[in-house]
Length: 305
Image (cartoon, rainbow, N blue to C red; front, top):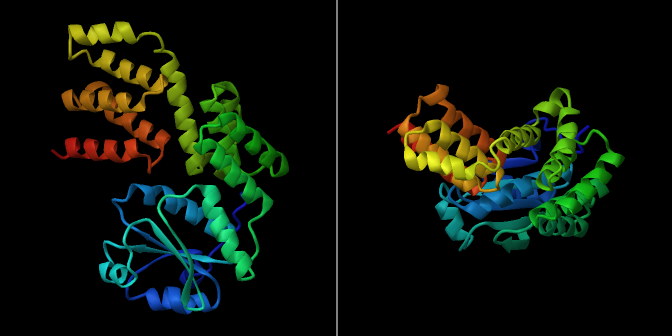
């Protein structure tokens, strides 16, 4: 069972909500009488926001109702942003009893955000995050610094304590894959069944595994594939295989560029293979990854040109 047992009975009890200038008084000022309200000021074009908001959502839900996260899109609520003097984003405020009690600006690691929330809940009588949540934050911090061995060790400990923790299983599989142990990563992923098998993070790792295994077949063929493309720029198979090889070599940006060029040259080739492969790459990288965002934009521009 996933550690997050939070369930919402209705909009008023949802741990994470979107609000606006009109709703700010009720959703933040009035609501903060009952519990601390964390307000995330963000915008769709803000890269650091796309990294920070999922962390805020995850840790808010882990708090099991002790706090609430209210998200404010400043593009749609410019007057409110001016009133609160939001000079840059992401900006996060914590409100209690109708007034701001803590804040930070800019991107933060999961460990830093957890410390912010722990401090808030400790000050206002809420429970601190559980040991499992603390371990998950530590594992995420290790992964962020590419300490894949350290991350895998922590995820292993979490699963020993709570074998059904889906996010820990996905994290372990990804850490193993990144550290070169694709065989064990496959065992972890294939061992998940039911709803766990269709979890978004699990699906992303599974796609990464599939891509890595297929890319392995193209390993060491760079020179030959590049020579084929020099001989014929319309050798679509060579371009496709080179993209897989580049991804396997840890160069996803080059792989995406090759597939976009293949799509531009012949989108119907091999039953739309370039577009289908791009979708898999975006899924493996994750929806908020910078390469996914720019790659999807370029693909969409080509599709609707």
